Image 1 (cartoon, one colour):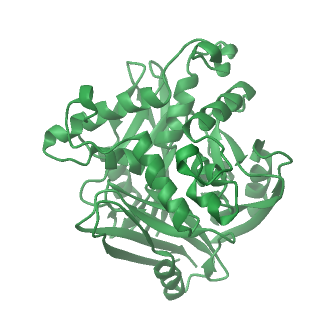
Image 2 (cartoon, one colour):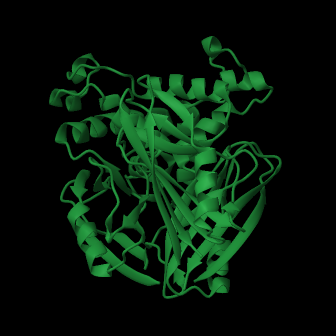
Length: 144
Length: 144
Length: 144
């Protein structure tokens, strides 16, 4: 069995942002020399997601608006006024812990013939929900 | 290590629909002759999901109504009237790209003793959110 | 290839509850003697989730309130009064089948240097949405 393990460092300059990690993961699959296997790509932080969807800026703006409707940012800690109990810890990022559950922590992608085995429009993204600091994405490849 | 890779072709005649892929995946696990391992099953299209839940038509109708509440179909591209920016591309399927995030892209299932290692009610489904055309589900098995 | 397969039995005394399974999974990774690989952790029941997020009780209470807003418990079976068609089967747990889709069925975690390869705050939890009976979580480890 061959394996490759790599942490990709991210720093999104705003609170939220969607960043393509597609080419980095493609490159790591090549480096791994795995012909047949699987690659796990996951956020290592609990206020961020890794997901696969369209590389289209309008959709990304739609996601932003939609997630904000489902679970609005609110720095307060009183649920009666839209805040979150989590923010009693001194954090203001409770919404981010919720948004990441909708968008997901991780994806697992097949490797076939030495390449990511993806459909025509599948594109790999990191979604930051509480940025302005350094974070990591883990890429773990196993196979042979 | 043994591997098996198979693309299952789907064509759902309506815009949305839930289709069992359980027996096909069971059959592929048998064919793979993998005794101990994992199987990844993922939609290869970004307006569809693979998920595991109950094989019960009432629940499936509940999902339909619920997803439509969380992210209604709207062919328009003006957010002020319930549309989506993504639809400016000429598509009308922005809602589908959202619904698939709720229901998920993929599942990973253990293989033990040569079989899918599932609980008593776990059933594998494909969920189409933008049908009326041919699409694929990928099944990737690794193990030994 | 080494593998380890283990079912963890759960019994949450209330309808809903979040239970840490972090130490149990860490221990199984040690037992497996896998140095490099992946571990799949999934609910074996379709009204429960396995997820990774913060070990913080305020956030867990926030999740409870949020999920109840997105898909309220209702034992009825008439959608016109907030019920679910699924409950026509005699069950009262349709909401649980929805909540588990938001929080997810499974996580896949990398194993590196013989340990769970996690970020600083990633913590493994079981989320019960229809408790008061025995259920199982599956842990499947593969690697070498």
